[in-house]
Length: 107
Length: 156
Picture (cartoon, rainbow over the protein chains, first blue to last red):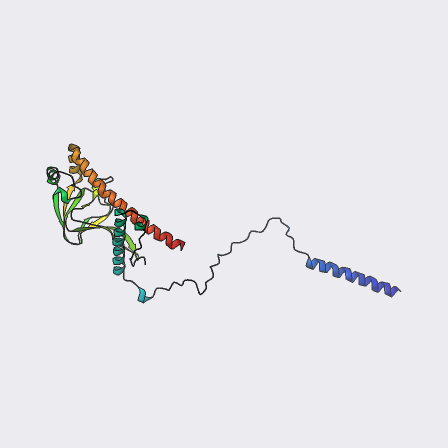
């Protein structure tokens, strides 16, 4: 009888310890402070690139435009723009103001 | 130079134009030479008699300063109107791409002449307003076209 009571007490004690340990393990953590810790800014994530994205080809020696040619293109662009602006002044309409240019400098 | 051949002397009588041209000097600008530089004191106004003048502004192109043409003026047209508009400093550079002949009108002489002859001063000021107004409208339209392209590029 004594042995049965001892075993029963030990079992109850073991069950209680197990229950406390389980409760402690599964209890959600509580912060001691109500203030949220300051979050460090995370670097902006670059937008994903997909196959459909426009790909800008790197400059290659073959596509290099000499400065003299570039200056000539700028000059030609200015002339075309002046001609377009002059046409607008002679006939000021929305369509005349926004006519498309054939300038290689912007196309 | 006959008054009807010059945008600045337009509507002046032959006699009025002759009196203006009496204190002018004729200059020949060799091909490739500079008539004035950006920021120079604007002491004289120029009427182009023959040839062509390129008006340029400096622009950084690949790390180098390059003169970019913003306007070209030919025979009968006027350059250097900063001579009559404070602070009397040139806001563009002017060069001759080919041998060019200009009539130079000194600012101080013009000012004295206008004070003594207000009718002539009024006519020339009106002609100058047309020249300045035209450039303003032209560049306004050019600026808007460039802005439109910038907006389209950024909203695409």
